[in-house]
Amino acid sequence: MHLVLVSSLVPVENPSSGFDIANRAVLDGLRALGHRVSVIGYLQPGQSVAADGDTYLLGELEVANAKVGAATKIHWLATALLHRTTLSSAKMLKAGRRHVETLLQGLQPFDGIILNSVQLPGAFAPVFRKHPTIYVAHNVEADSALENAASASGLLERVLFKREAGLLEQVERQLTQAASAIWSFAEADRFGFGYAVSDRAAVLPLVTRWELPESGVEGLPEYDLALIGTWSWKPNRIGLDWFLSKVVPHLPADMAIGIAGQLPDTPAISHPGLRFLGMVPNARAFVEAGAVVPLISRGGTGVQLKTIETFELGMPSVATRASLRGIGEIPGNCSIADDPVEFARLLTEKVAQVRAGNRQRLSGAAFHRAQKARLLETLKRGLAGLAVPVTAPAPRVSKDQTALPLMKEKLRTSHGFAVHEGGKS
Image 1 (tube, rainbow, N blue to C red):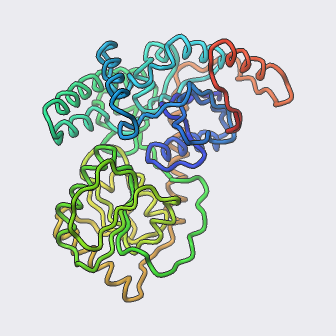
Image 2 (spheres, helix red, strand yellow):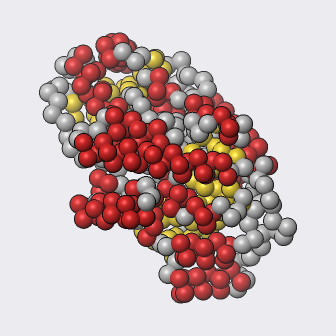
Image 3 (cartoon, rainbow, N blue to C red):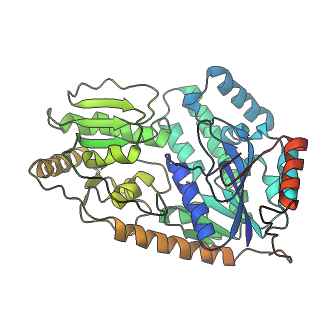
């Protein structure tokens, strides 16, 4: 098959955020099944396009609210209000509908479009609904927006989140009703778009990387507890605030707690062992430098990629039930608690065992193999249901032929697209 993957942010060479990791897993899985995949979307500044395939960039775009100034945020809001769309889709309108239509025309024939999350598909829904589609639901975004509204700090923020939730519900309904298959990342999300489409929905197991590297050399832990995440994303921040305000006060004063990742504002916490580290050069190495990993999700939807990474690394952990969404089998070195006092007690016990010489580390290879096998099987079943396959096979032009380069050059010069082959511009 020739498939077109449409994503707000294209898969990148070195994924770090949960969204990037999921993107790459879907792309790698489709290619592992032997399909040709053309990718359309924006590139986040500072990232490199994933190799081994054709990526058609709509431009560079920073989508994180925490990384842009007030003027950009006001522009996004004004665009959303003017076009009566969500704030997340308003960011995507920069490329323009005509550019997206022209790009799709240049990629034909293809068998179907994989619509990856709601942002870019929601911005240009009339363009994509002309073709057979599969919808990839990273979350039930309307539900997440409602949770954000409930925890908003002010009236304006609450109103904006409620507006976002209402529009997201409409867009998600349209995308799921039109799709021949829906791939979610957690069992609960299969029914998040209504029972009318749930028979077409399946849970897509994930891996954080296609080939699992060897574990690092184990030395003495640098931190008793290691937490890392994109804390500027509201659902992640809710979990972090719960951990800091409810769990940390019950932890011993001599416990070393390292928190890595983008954090817009540093909370005032008095625990003497707490360290906010900001961005770290190697997320995997940081996690492996911890004794125990707290998995602290308190809301949102979708699977928690940090949970999967922790299990792939075989790290001991304590997890809330919300952190275990989408996980079929829980490793033996993971304990579960939602009560903050119990959560702190379990962390303290596990850290004490590590300090006594019992690292509690397991091999994550079996977990990784099982996830990957289920991922491929789910992808295969979903692709079998694509409504209207093209009658002619997708052309596979070798690099020494001229048809594909000429088409790309025409797109590049006439419409301002950036085209990447194998991750190189």
